[in-house]
Length: 419
Image 1 (spheres, rainbow, N blue to C red):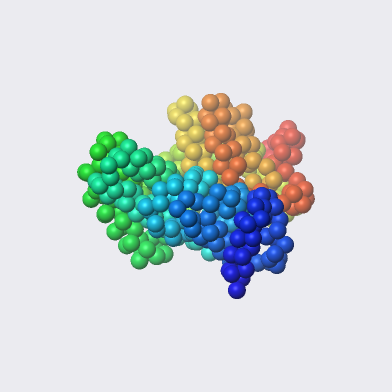
Image 2: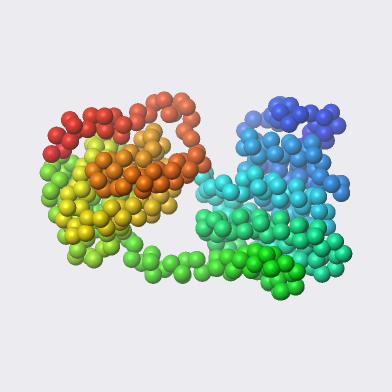
């Protein structure tokens, strides 16, 4: 019954020519609070009404775009709705759907509940299958059509979206998760992939053939993503380093840093840990400790330990290194790996109400552990990731004091205590 009412509300908005803003206000009046638009299938209802004619309805499409931009609907429900449209002969409708995908496919992220993340994975795989079917349709059409230029343009649009989605390792990883969750859907995708692959040789343009081959290759690499990196994964976990750092931060916070330096150097040499992975494990341990520390005095202690004592200890460790120039490159490499742990860093930033990585980079630069160009490059990458991260509500933010900034402003005093 709610879906019928939703359809009626959309039709009323179209008949009365509501603006997108007016439509959003009235929709919230029509439907009770507490019911999410995804449960009501708002995205699908809007697309169904917008795609009734030979060309898309621009007014109803504007409602959908407003719903996407204002986050009334999730990306996963929009992708799912798009993947259900199968009349590929309606070129204008296909073009509009591709433009809608452009609005958010570069910024897909998995923040939220587990079921929401899995839903996004499934929706992304379904939309990939849809793009493959669309590409295969236009490939077949090129064999028959008299207007080769238009056919090539339509195929190029599909292949560009395929390439955009598949160029992201994160997106391919999400699709890999969906493959494990729904093997039947993956089998359907493989059939669509085979259909496109068999038609590549018939494409008239070398550029189109190259684009299509690249997309096919990337999709075929998805099932072996884990096995391709399994050897590396076996050698990237070093719990002893984590334990040494956590023990020092918990039991010996204000003690001399020299014993810690000697312990870390011993562990590194005995376990033959590459320096960049060793440094990565140190930073991971610090950030985990920062996130899990109890509020109050313990949190302040961990903050001082992470942002002051550890950088100073690593500066002493650098002096023990035979190749000090290589140490800086390994530090840069460690931070590059650390930046890939986006959820961990976002959690730390939320806990501390600041950009933790930026402050760590500045301390390392100050102590000669990181060059200025590397600092700027790493800081820019983290800033780009933070722009996509969910923000705390202002009421929550206001109650959280940025302890790292407080500690760093009192650095001389704190350093004397730590010594």
